Each structure stands twice: as C-alpha cells, then as structure tokens.
Image (cartoon, rainbow, N blue to C red; front, side, top):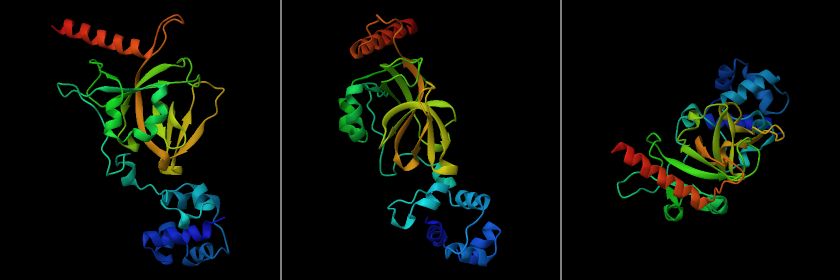
Length: 259
C-alpha cells in the first residue's frame, strides 16, 4: 500500500502544508501527520473524500506509487471541460471540393492501422470517404464494428460517430466508439466515472459480456454513435464498396429533391 507516501506526494503537489490540508479535509494536523507517517489510516468515507478532493481513484491513491508515474492520473474540474486531444494535436479530417467535411471510413482491415495513424493527416487522407447530407453540421467518422457484443446490431455494421471534444460532453448510457491504447476500437455504452475514479465504464448490450473499465489516460478519441448501417436481410450484399455506392446514390437523390 502506498497511501501514506501518495498523500504526502499529493499534498506537496498542491503546495499545501499539513495544516492547510487538514483544514480542507476537516481534520486535525496530527491526523494528517499520522497518515503520512503510516501510523494510521483514514476511515473509508474519509479516504473517499480525499480521493475525490484530489480527483484520483481510490485504487490509485492506495495501490499505485504516484511518485514513479510519468503522468499522475489527476482530473481537475478544468480538465474535465478541456479537449480530449492533446493541446499540440489538431484532429485530422478531409474535405471535398466545396470545403465540406467528409466522413472517413475505418473498416475492419484499417482498424489496426488507425491506432497508429489516427493523428496523421496523410494517413487519414488514404481512408475512403463519403458524405451524408442529412447529418447536422459536425465532424463525423464511420467505423466497422465486429462481434456480437452490441446485439441486435450485427457484426460488420458500420457505425457513424460524431466527434466528442470534451470528456464532460459524455452522457451516461449513450453509445460511443471509443479509441484507446489498450483496447483499440470498440463500440459500447459508456458511463463517465472520470471525475470520481479516473475511468470510463464500458458496457455491452449483449448481457453475456461483462462491463469493463478504461483509464482516462488511455483514451485517444471518442465518437458518439449517431447512425448505423447494417444488414437488412442475411442475403443483403453489404460490402464496404457497396456501402459507399449506396451513400453516393443517396446524396445524388437528395440533391435532385432539393432542386
């Protein structure tokens, strides 16, 4: 357990004395001292209060030596309302001749490459793309989903996602395409526990799959599911190229209707 050293580390990171932290936690200075020296441990409710105050999970404050971590997983109120992307990175997109944003398609074959090239504008330019004129203004990307974890959505469906800029924009129980370092590209129902525990809880619609957590620091991108294209009948030819053809035909039909 690393609670005593972590508490001292977090206190100093805040620039607090033991007296100042004791005031914030409604404790005596001697109690803070005994915690930091490992002579005593707080009750669970006080431990939870401390974890919430420092915006870190209870598991991390107890079991991880924060002094050895290159990036301490702290989440302030300001961070929850800042872009998910690193400040130095701009989301790579493509546009058509009229400067309208395209919807780039990440099919199953491109999924592995996307984890390495998602931030590379040259890689994004190589993805096939289309447009859906009836979608509201925004930035969208399409992902082919494999497996049966989100039944009744069949494996091979294409989920169209709208880019989520801020962690605070996530809505509990809504479906998102989550891109992460460890799990790659997944489509799940998301529950935002970042402020309390520093993680997202991902749940499948198929009850045979257990929910699991993704630490916030592993997240690369998040796209809110807004539409999907899937098999109508088992015999339907829903190849990747046919999807693009259908979308182009739909676009032309809508343009004719507008005229």
